[in-house]
Length: 325
Image 1: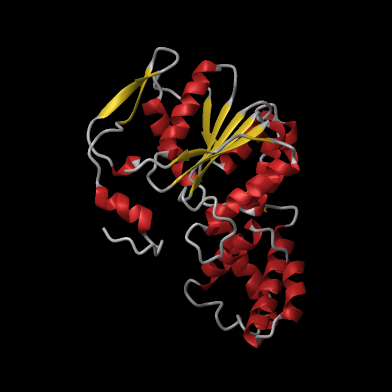
Image 2: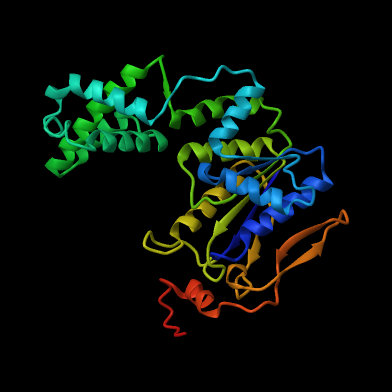
C-alpha cells in the first residue's frame, strides 16, 4: 500500500504523464485492476484519451470511472440492490411539497417560495449540505452563536426545510450525494478494490465523504496516485492562507499526507513536473517513444518551439513576483 502525488503547474503534462505511466503499468501487469477516477463530466474524455494513447487502442484492464460510477461497479459486484436515487427534478418536486406545508414555520422564506428559481436555489443548497456532511442538528447548534438576526433567521428556515425534506424521503429515497456514504459501508467487502491501482485526476480538492473513500483506498488498494495542480516553486512553502492561489491544492496535499500517516501507508516520492516551457505551451509535431513492451505511445515533443508568452503568464499570474515579460 502506497500513495504518490504527481505535481506541477497548469499545462505541465500531469494528465499525460499519469495516463502514460498507467498504460505502461497495465500492460506489464495484465492481472492487476486499474481505476482512473475523474470528475463525472470528464469520464468520456478520459476514455477517449486513454484509448488513443493505448498501443492496443482499448482500455483493457483500466476502468475509467467517477466516484459515483465506481459506487455502481461495487454495488453490481456485491449484488447490492441499487437504492432509489432522487435526481434534481425529484428534489425540486419534494422541496416544493414540503415547503408548501411548512409556510407558517418559514417567516423569512414564505414570501419567496413562488419566486422563479427559488426552489432551485434551495435544491442546490441542500445538495451542498449533504455533500459536506452538514446535518440539521449541526445547523441548530450554530444558530445560538450567530450575531446577525438575518443569518439567524436564514439558518432557522433552512433547518426547518432540511428536516422536513429528510423526513419525507426517509426509507423511500436517497439523494445522489448519499450514494458515496453507501459505498463507504460496502467498499471493504469489494474484491475489485483490493490490490488495485487507483489514480485520481482533475480534482482541486475533495469533499469529506470523498476523503473517507480515499482513506479506504489507502487501506485496501495496492497504490493510489493523485495529481495536484500547484506551482512546484511554492509547493514546499509551508502553510498558506485562504487567499493564496494554491491554498486548495496545498490543503489537499496536507490532508492526503495526514491520511497516509494515519494508515501507516508508504509515501512514495512526489513526481514533480517543472520543465519550462510547459507541455501545453509547446507546438509542433509529436514524437513516439519506445515502450518496455516494444510498443509505442505518443507524447508531446520536448524540443519543439514554445508559446513563451503563455508559459510566462502561467508562471506569474496572481503570483505578484514583479517579473515583466
